[in-house]
Image (cartoon, rainbow, N blue to C red; front, side, top):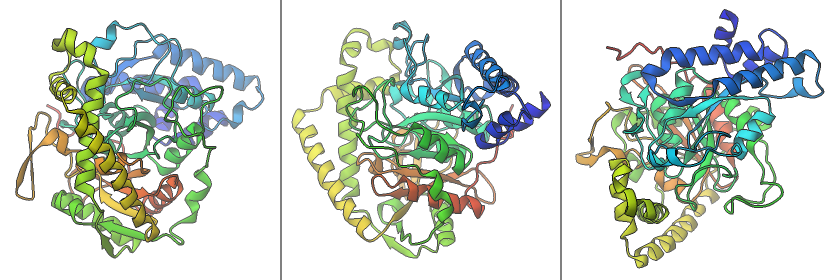
Length: 478
């Protein structure tokens, strides 16, 4: 077991290799993951459900098949690797909670989400479901139903949201891979605050079949990992449209474009710009310093402003508010008291917005997307901080930002929301100061160019600028 426990500290690629070469069994690796979850989750609160029985059965099946030299099994790239998913992904036999109390009363899912199926087809083993903001409407995962997720690097602080459990589980070493969703920043914010890598792909790139929706025109699904290679590998394994029908109407009917082979290409030919203006004004000194450190490593000297950025973010706010309110209007009418107070009031407000405002917001969003597209005629990659600051203490209500006092929870998405609302692919890379907690830097590219974002991330990782160390789980303990 000690070998499996040590193996769990590595990345998914190394874990699969160890299983493939019989250095460790899939069963031992899964047991190590389950034991670590049991030992740490009382402090971190990343998991809301641990699927131990299912995981053990699947690991035993993999080991039996491997012993019998089942054709093709040894080639599975995630053979025996434990992973977990935000609890808005369907898991067969469990109710899909989406961070709520109301959904606990719904019927269990009859099948796994499509992306869960794809990772398991590559040999991975699902070990559970992860905590999140209710209905994905938040940036801190201070969930009043399941309790707050605690940042593994300092248990007194937030993990970010809404995929807070996903970021925390990877940072804590409970699993090497996790899946989350990103509507306005919900992968990149926890990746930033927990110090792990996160990828929000192009809108429509990964099918959302079998996931609980938040805003259908803005929702993205994507992975978290502790290495760029694992991030790229898991992304490649999940690519491709649905076969046999289109249950996710937002999924692009586009074939897979593998990114793993491009990681070794480095910065050759890439033009990099640093986003200033709005993105500097809405970043504390520590966040801007992280961007400057990345820019220096990439020899990026040109600063550029994103056109229409504040109008674009305002449009995203209105669209999110209105569509979220419309989705939950029946439950808001019948049982408003059962909602998380932090999300209920925003859903109610969104349900009351005039239709004319939403029509205008959609037009602004389209114009904004067109304006931003022009920047990619001059740059291949853009850089910006992922969060205005590092992780704040749990319960913090206000954020001081360049002389302004802003509400913390929505403000954690100040720097991410402008990109998800127009569907751009973004990789969040964790940058650590000499002292203190990490802040992520967004590596932003044109639609369908995830390869470029991950190439840059790989360069930064190789240079030691971006890194995702395991949390000690001792800081901030009482």
